Image (tube, rainbow, N blue to C red; front, side, top):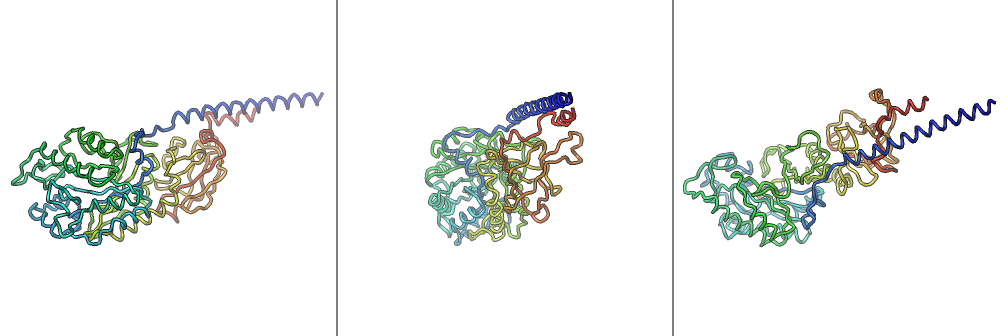
Length: 469
């Protein structure tokens, strides 16, 4: 009789456990489906030769021109109120005898950068290339060499994509309608302001840039103060240079957006950018061009910005301003080399990895993924040495801090703050947030199951109720 009673009790116990397992299995399926639904939509790819841009996401920006001679700011003529007649005299001093494009590319590669963008003409109108449409260029200086050609030749030899910046605002060309608006001079004596004639000048110069330097991978417009629209200009670029990506600061919406100096236009938390985006930042706080006694950003600030964009499917341009002799300042080069050391250690979490921040409710971290591997980016200031990845409830089979290669301690147990859900969530513990404060830590978590199945299913707290019945 007792044997039958025990058998019945065991049967009920097994049936209850089976029911609980079935319910949990169903809930995990639902949770996985919901995770798939929440998966971020990546920015659309081009489907043509421009897709190189999605493979090489970190680039070097270079602001260089006559303004480097005084070392104040790339907008010296405007910000320091220098008369045009005085500013143009700087061309007689332009002689960057130490310019070596391979030295620039060496530093870029040390930083982990995969492409370069050079200011061919900034707002001051001085051109770093040979042009038939103005004598205000590097060929009519003591230096007498075509900067863009020298850099283009080095880039082609090393298979390093080259993009070219071109300023629409022009403080030198007499047809540009300077009206004293932002980033403009007041009307200048002797000018013949005529926007349409200026646009013809601009088109002729951009045609030179697209036709005279071999394969070009991008045109980076700046400062369309008039907000004039003319789609034929970008159409011309695409016809001449089909691999060239074009930003949104020109005469139409272009191919991608350009948040600047850590300003992000998105509202609230965005796990990734649904529109193609390339952020840009300079190593110097005050200037994009060379500035004597520049104040530099901390490594942490710059690395944090790089990680924040690359981990969300965006590109990133980090700028340096070479000195008048053509060399990159020692401190700027040192910053790039230190960034490169970080980048090389964590690049597997950024290159070819997909945004995955939708998998956690923790908005102090960003997640990327590659198959069943999850990367945890501590790009915000860590508030402690532990990171909780709610609602993840499964421990990885292996956890490594990419920065050092050392193992990361993981725990899945209920913390006091989880008493309401009564669930233990995955935590990364004893992270070196103090000893490695001037960087961004990235942890690699390798799971033996699909990532969509490692989160607590809806109603997970009911497991205890099922177990108690």
